[in-house]
Length: 207
Image (cartoon, rainbow, N blue to C red; front, top):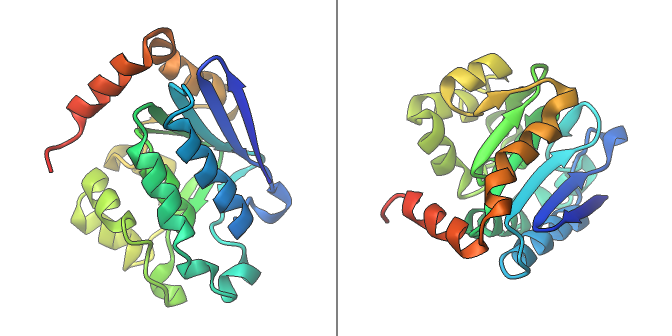
């Protein structure tokens, strides 16, 4: 399930399926996409994505993946909604990030992670293509060769290497993860939503 906690302009969306490594069903992805789309117009100034337990998300629920979820457009709907948000978006990665769950994290403005996390996207081995926007977003962060190491060579990247590559922006202890994310959002939450949106628009690369 997905829970949403809102505090005066801050929304924390939490993936809560730790008994299944936070693997994502279509209903969960739809809930996240709905929340991201709503944040565009409901006064949200910062959105934090996180998970419960030791894994941020193992990607698609296996049963639903076999039934077609692996190629469902809901993944792209979710990452596109996050990328389009005018507010600050932070992925607070409480553990390993795998498979299609990469999309929502790559679409965020910032990524924090715990030291124990691993990062991998085993589409080559599983015979799927990555979600359409993921390769370009990944390459923009870490470069084409390293993107190919993850997507084509199937490499599993540890948190320290992910930090060195630019895949994540900071490593923090698990007990400090959400507090660190909230701290990064503090200036945005104290400002007008229009001010934050204007700065974010200036940072976006020219099309």
